[in-house]
Amino acid sequence: MSSLVPTEFCPVYSPFFGVMGATSAIVFCCFGAAYGTAKAGVGLTSMGVLRPDLIIKGIVPIIMAGIIGIYGLVVSVLIGNGVQQQMSLYSGFIQLGAGLSVGLAGMAAGFAVGIVGDAGVRASAQQPRLFTGMILVLIFAEVLALYGLIVALILNTKASTSTC
Amino acid sequence: MSSVEKRTTRTTTEQTSFGTSSSSSSSSSSGSRSSVNISSATVAKLAFFTVAMIVFPIATYFLTVDRYFEGNATYAGISAAVMANVVLIAYVAAAVMEDSQAGPAPVSVKKQQ
Image 1 (cartoon, rainbow over the protein chains, first blue to last red):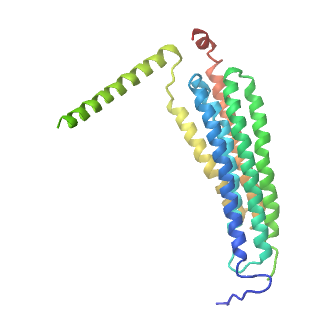
Image 2: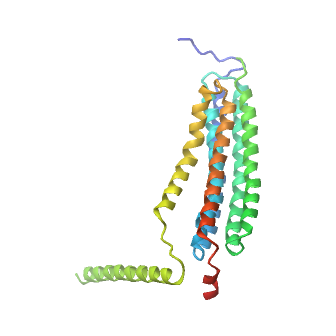
Image 3: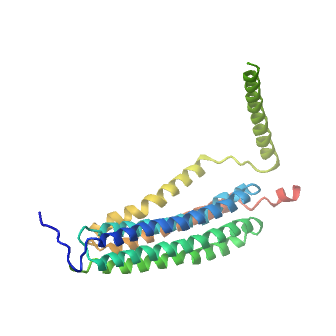
């Protein structure tokens, strides 16, 4: 069994930053997804009292908020697979940056999806032609989380190319 | 003893009031607007999309990371994100198709109210 000797570039505490990156990816994305689900769900239940036939269409903002949580899950799985006992501090910092980028971008996107979903389902019950407009705005809000995911993936590829 | 009797009578009255309120609400809902019974097909569709949204992206990541991308996690992550968006587009398409099958909105309900 090879002994793990901490060096200048691979100190003992470098996995902390990697694990914090994995945690922040899922935690902040879940903050955003929870707010989006809650706010859009409030609008859906208010709208569904008078228009129960539109409930299935009105679940679309909630699905989009759920996908933001999926983005956080994918990035945290990616980062978690790359955390080792002896890894460079460089890799740890990169993983922390990747996790924070998708996490905070997902939180922002979740806020947008929730507010637009709430107003959109309430308004599309009275004006059916607003549904496609709501979908378009929701796509623009969702893409913000996708940008965070892309940055996280690009950063994470650089985390494996380091030596002690 | 009398308090126990009062409690039991209160619970029975609560149960009957629940019964009457639920029956009255169901009768009013069926009387004043179209039937709101959720068919089993709708429930099955919702359950499928819920499970699909959770399972498909992560399964895509783990299936493709070693088999198709030779351990390159970035491409596997991109395919997982693509699969999540595919599930979303499928749900929107299914919802719009179901809505177009159900027909136009019951505007007459609002006018009656």
